[in-house]
Amino acid sequence: MTPKDNMTSPGGRIGIYCLDQDHSTTSSVGLYNYLKRLIGALSQMPDPGFEVVLLLSSANRDELVPKSRPAWLSTYICAGAYGSGLRRLKADHIIVRRLIKELRLEVVHFPKGWLPLVPVHGVRTIATLADTIMHYYAVHYPGFVSVPKLKYFNWATMHTLRNADRIITISKASREALSDLRKECREKTTVTYLGPGLPVRPMTVEKEFDFLVMGSRVPHKATPETLRLLADYSRQKGLEASVRVAGLSGWPKEWGQEPAGMSIKYLGKVPDEDLVRQMGRARALVFLSYIEGFGLPLIEAYETGTPACYRDSTSLGEIMRGVPGGWDGGDQAGFSRALDEVMEMSRHEIAEIRNRLRNDFNWTRTAEETLEIYAEELSAAHTSTAGN
View 1 (cartoon, helix red, strand yellow):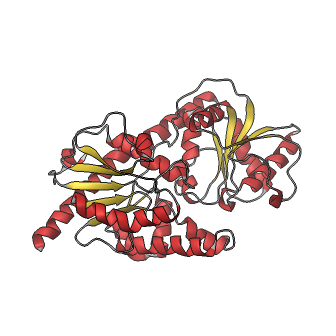
View 2 (spheres, one colour):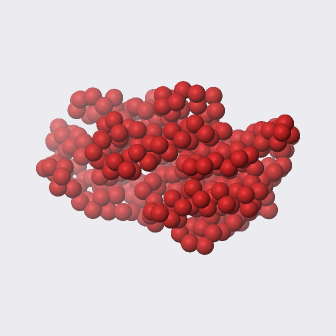
């Protein structure tokens, strides 16, 4: 339901801060796709009884503004690009405060999660914190991320947990992780699940290769471990598996010896439409990331008709809820059993799982739940104003 369906419309104006979202420079495509799909879904909702303003840059407006949008969803464009570096810091901590005052916003949603250093008095803030990845790196991979970057983003997370009026996160696992960092934030944290980030669609193409891997140099994606497990699986089965790795142009030298016994094709950076086609042509997606806020590739793969083998921990096990192919992160034998489950699934089983995932995780539901949060925070803002 939308706020208009289940409560008195509060009126007022909410801003969604988008200046720092730039597809060409982002290191988090998942967060960018979250914002883009959320905006698209909001544009299809009935009038919630209040105005929503997209705070955009001239660099991202063409990608983020829907082709058609309702009168209650407006835009404000700032000239320039603010996706990285000092310009991003200026936008995140200075420009946004000016825009809040200039546009007389009562509530502001920060989809990337980072609040301005100095809060704006009298304005309620909503922050989407998808995961605790930087704290994970501080513990497990302290040398991988530069110390200044690690300190800044860890500070930004704690600053947001302390000062945001409302936290949105994307899985129960992430809510627990955030609560571990600051237990007081549990009561103000709401889980809103996502829909597919890629423009996926059901596909009936012939399978062209065995396994698709979402490759990355960042350690938590577990790419070298994934390929070594697949090489051992290939040898056990007496076959030369065909593997395609999206996101990498080759095997990095610092990973040591490249696994043998497979035919591996490195695809490099793949445009979204091409990645969807690669998913549909694979017999299985193998997604063994150590930590994810949600795990979008799993539901995206099933949407194209491709099953997935996944690490059954953090949010991945939560999202899949017992779907065959979950691996506990133990030994090679356990991985082989999990992958066998996937490879033995029938088209009927895959379609049933796809339909369940589609029903549970879709952008219409995300937009409805987000608008409910907006309405609640606007009501709280009006109550606070009246009290003063």
